[in-house]
Each structure stands twice: as structure tokens, then as C-alpha cells.
Length: 393
Image 1 (cartoon, helix red, strand yellow):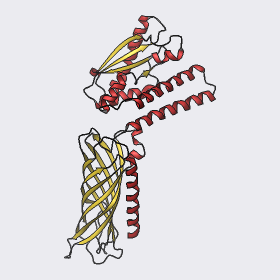
Image 2 (cartoon, rainbow, N blue to C red):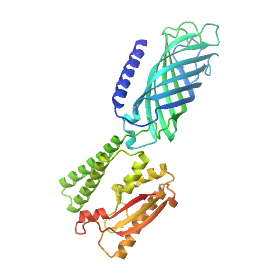
Image 3 (cartoon, rainbow, N blue to C red):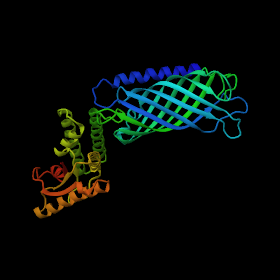
């Protein structure tokens, strides 16, 4: 049993180290240090003498540590842990205190599984390593029982702010060369003690950057997200062609592909911005984030809901920003009608953002009338004119 735990620990260390070395080749700016602590319940099992046993679960398990992330995928942490073991109902009285100090590798499983594609506030860390400690048996007079440790666990993260995350952790600890039973009874035939700890705690992120490695999102990953959208739209085109779809629907979808492809090319060729927030602001003000509408409609197209969500996330993060929401219409119809239609489109997007939690006082709906910059004779170009744009102030 001991050899299995040691082998698992060594394989885990080698794997996460290799992954971390590979993923840290690209330069990135993020905070690397965090202070972490937690408190919760514990359960030791096996290796009790007859008549003794612990509560299921029992109180108390605590931990306090410091973590350093080499990249947004891999890091290390040094942590101190304390457990108090005591009798459960219908068992004889005992009390044992356990202390340990460990070194663990940490793997950002949430990032490896692309959690960022669907959430920016939920994460998952895996950790494992080795340590040393001792057990202090209170019911018998004996020297401290010094042991080695092999640890492994998972931590669910919930981002509360750029500086704080809530952690729910489950960790299994194997005590190697534990001479006595958990209650202090003489002899341990397995020479091994097993403990499971479940804790709730916090990570406090340190550093001058805006994001910690746990939540950092590289620019090249942003491009992958946009590229995946292009691939999805191109797949839709092929499906429509296979089903002999109407020409107008094909043109509309191809137009959306062309717009996103243009955005991706512009992003990849752009000069690196001084900050991510300024970079996003420039993209918005340069017209790369648009909300589109069907002909003579004030209902947002389904594919454009991502643009509304993007602006909602930006405004929620940048609470001091205000935005002009600018509506446009194509050139078909009278100027007066197009002015009213463009205003209604701007109002529709403002309504969506306020319903999503953005203060309406930060949003100014402006009807800009018709957009005469596109070719009026082209149905595909007119689709690009039927839109709402944003101007961040």
C-alpha cells in the first residue's frame, strides 16, 4: 500500500511539472502568489484498536498555506495542517492531535478543461504531494508518533473578486509508518493511517497585476474562442447548403462568418495594448462588437446575444464606464422611419443590458438613423447596416 501511494505521488509530480514547463513558455502577466486557509471536518479510518472509533465526520480539520503558480496551469504550495481526532458515539473516549507540513504540486484542471469557455467564476484545482508530521496521543503516555505523508485532493473554486476566491476542498492524507492506532493503541499492523479532510476556506491573491494565474486568460486563447465561432458558423453554412437552404439565409450566415474573420485578423495583427481593459475599449469603440437585427425588426438576432453578454461583462467589471448604445438601419424606407427604427433598436439593447443587471443611468440609447456606408443594392451589405454599436466613454 505504501509503495502504491509513493508511486502515485511521484508520477503526479512528474506529470504536472512537465505540463507546467510547457505551458509557461509564452510570456504572460498575472499574479502568482496566494495565501490560502480552510477549516472543516475530518474522518480517519482503519487502524483503531477494539472499542475505539471516530465520529463520521468529526471536527476539526484546518490548513494554512502559501501557493506559487509558475503558469496559469501549474504551481506549488507549502501548507501546514492540523487535525483533531476524537471518539464518536458509542465508542470509548480518546483524543489525538495530528500535525503535518507538506509540499504539493497544483494543477489548474479548470483551465485544462476550458472552463473559461462557459464561466469566469468557477474553477477546479487538483493538488498532490508529500510531507511529514506527527501524532500526539492524549489518552496514553508515549513519545510523538512521527510519520510521513502522501496527499492528494481536489479544490472547487468560486471567484468572489479579483483578489479573493472561495474554496471547497477534499483531501486524502496517507500517514506512512504510523506506528500506533489513531486512538493511541499499541501496534498498527498496516503501518499506515488514512484520513479524509473536507474544508471550506479562502484564497487571497497577492500581486500588482489585475488577474491571478487561476483566472488568467491569454490573448491567444481569446483568438481560439473566436476561431471556434467561425468554425461553428462555417459548419452551419455547410449544413444549409446540404439542405438546399434559401440563398438569403446562406448570405446572412456567410456575412456573419466574414465579419468575425475580419475581427480575428484585426486582433492578431494589432499592437499589444497597455492593458486588457483598454484593449477591449478600443475594440468596442472601433466597431468590432455589434448587435444585429433582421429586416424591419427590433428583436436581437440569436447569434448576437454573445455581443450583449460581452458588453454586460465589460460594464460589470468596469463600473466607472458609461456607454452610448447607437442604433442603425439600412437605407430602405424613409429617413423618418429609419430614425425611429434605429432608436427602437438602441432601446432594445439598453433594455437587455438593464435586465442583465447594468444600471440604466450608465447607458445612453442613440438612434443614428440609416447607415449609408454600405452598398444599398446588396442584401448582404444591408444586413451589416441593421445593427447596434457601442461607444465606451
